[in-house]
Length: 182
Image (spheres, rainbow, N blue to C red):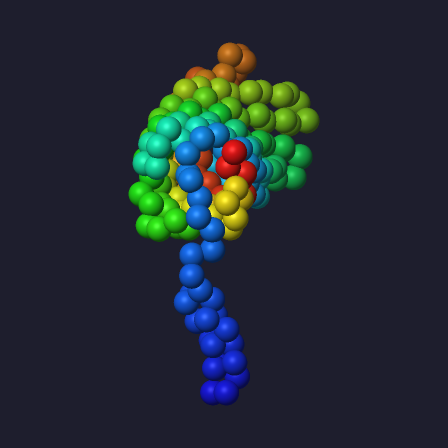
């Protein structure tokens, strides 16, 4: 029981700290993220990926954001499969206090899937929709950490002969990001 209190007391004291940083929350921001990407067509494959994002907050509740992300290799054995997307969304933010906020976004996505096999290389691409939610925490006046969950879905097509014409696909990503607010 004493071990449990030695662990919980410092954690509880962190929660009682005053607001760490007052942030203006408007203007440009740019950052990077580490993602856990799940790509689903018929079966679901998961892999770690990377992304960059940025945007502009017009005021404390509305902004525009762009996000570019890619997965690691989703393939098996001799197949290399990489999925990615570029998204543009309006972002609606709810400020909880000067440090913490939550947001929701919905917009358009340009999606791609690259498949590299010993016999052929094929690329699927298409346009879809994306939506997501997240939590943001101001670490300093300009540095922010965020946790986000985004879903991007659409039909992917290939111009290569012999492949399936359309793939109804979905990309889900759970991301931990760090960005700088100018």
